[in-house]
Length: 321
Image (cartoon, rainbow, N blue to C red):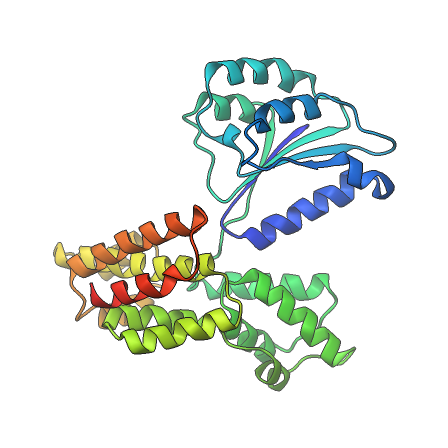
């Protein structure tokens, strides 16, 4: 199948999938000439894409035309759709058109419907922070792929430290492998070498919820010093506040069935609802709604190229809303 769409919030797993596709499809000696990445900022990106994907590879192996955050996955004018209808069925056998996005393609758009008719779709969702079982499985899978052996306690300690940050999990495992060599990694090694960013992100969310700007800015500074990506910080905050808002809305609406609330909030472990209720007892529904609006605005700003320096301003606003 000559067309691939990779999308999802886990940019690390998505990038690893792109690397795997390149390794599988491209000849190493000809890769520089046959891997074409066309930036969305290029005003002629669609025209360039259609020309490149219709052109046979140079030398040995195949060819990949990669469109990150492609406008083809959004609303396209009729003339572009007409060109796609001509081009997609005639892509050379050794060529691949790869489109990647952090957002789900909108299947209501004609261009997306057309592309999906000949595309292989793969998703890379970010595992929610509270789905510890899935995060444990992911860490074990990473460890197996790079031949690292961890005790069960070491796995638990690593998951507690990195949370759902797959990039950090992979990097920490590589660091632990260098340190331990062929020796199985135990919990003490993890505690000694791995910095806990997961708890800091959750502590930042808690500080924002309780209105403690001093603690919130302290946690933010710590995360940024550890090179935690601003978008990942915002994603964690949004996940926490979305959960709190959903639970609070159910309680304010008079729901009495905890199982129904847990299902609505999408809690994999219904017992966690007890702790969420404690956390949101003093938080008003209006505050949580305003917080989600602030986080949405911040996410849009960062994805539009806004500076991470704006984070502190928005964090203070979250604390004082």
